[in-house]
Length: 274
Image (tube, rainbow, N blue to C red; front, side):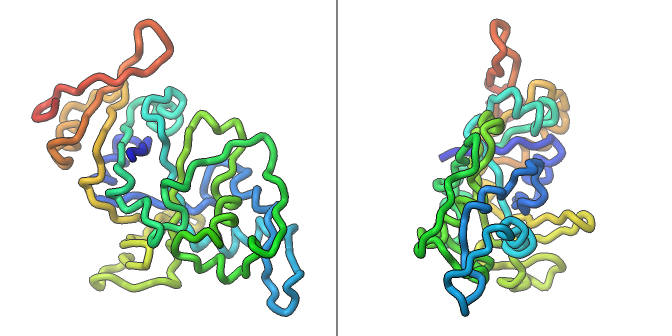
């Protein structure tokens, strides 16, 4: 299965050069309603009273606790969406990378809390109906330390990460969620800010007081397609970008359809690429 990531040209170079991509914490997203669906999800945080559920504090508890443990990779099924190119593709000056999510390890139930094949966003006008039964109540510490997919925990993570407002439906988003928490920490090769946990190999970068990056290492061969935006005219930079990629990668150059408001993808005829 091929899924796509819209990025600026500069970020595409960084992703390919490092063979790593950022999993972002949900409190850094641009949607103020992010994670609000869990206000209708009950979970136990007090062992002494199994009947206790704190619905009114669920969103804040998640953002200050569980949120710090998980990172999200946002992908899409649509590489030729005009709005997506404008919003996330640097106004058509960027790039869309097409990943084979199986080869990248993003469908593995053992190393993803929400694998790509379970990560389709559910778009809705209202919050989902309140869930309250024994099977979907979990202890707070369990939710914070989950490191793999299980049906037992999936209902909670679906509420936390897979519901969005209907206005976002044009994105056709698919999410992958991994545990990036340092409680699974194991420093790798004695290099600063590099670590390994049960969800993969990572580099942690502090950007500012309120923003950090957790960069997941993936096999470069899992990039199977690349789309160049219609406003990309950097001949030397394009050559440098493509030289880092496998020879058999499918390269497309985007253009405006002359008869409709559509983006079309044409074969890119650059040096060593057809």
